[in-house]
Length: 380
Image (cartoon, rainbow, N blue to C red; front, side):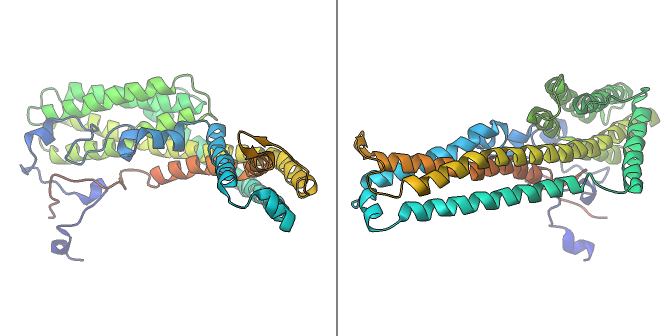
């Protein structure tokens, strides 16, 4: 495609925007406003909750809330729905039992579904474990890759050994970014053309880095808090802004300022692979927890479903009413809710995993979210 044909296209990554040093199309607000505040010029907010543009309740349900709490919500709706329809049904359930076998048919399906879910658990475990199995050569390559990355980070940070815990490792990178950003501020203090832009960038970066670093402190891997805090650090946009400053003011910056800006970019590029690695480990951790939870839930589910088939499908098995609802309806509703427990657990865990995966599809300086850019892209 010729350059002229791409003039009006929208791009998510920084490489797609060529900014001329003498370009004056930015307004003063765009130049001086700290990045990451989610303004009308298309700059994304720092926190993932704000960048998502969705209600806090929805994101709480998808990410923050305890997965066991989320698993109970569909079960409550199932119980309430069956009771409601049982109360409103012009032909009571007891009459349906007398003329057919609806309870037996229902719970036979639940038994089949439960056994299928156990098979699914075995498949999930096999998938997770397959990534941990391999020849000696494969394991050695994994080890060398991990050690090489840690050595590069240690050289960049200037420390004898990087922290082994994921939360501490990410904190060390974020603290290093802060330190290099402060060095950039000091080095660019004399650069009149870029001083305001760099000052705004450094202020936004350091303030948000402080917040994320505090949230990571003392967190144990395996909890979602570590990953949630790591996701909030909007490193992609910070890389983009740093590269934009370097390219736009390259001729105006001193060599010391350019080196300081390159150090910020270099340290930020370590954060992306580290976060993705810990995200992968967390996914494996959660899938193992999901598998165990579904196996545990399968036992009471099979007991309840089998008991319903054996003891509830006969007239007179349950008699009486409670608050105007036949007790058979209440028992069937409760048994149905318990029988759906494995599905509810699967739903609650996969909602979080799918949400995180969607929010982190791209690594590096590519932003997949739509943004209203206030400046047009110019091509040389």
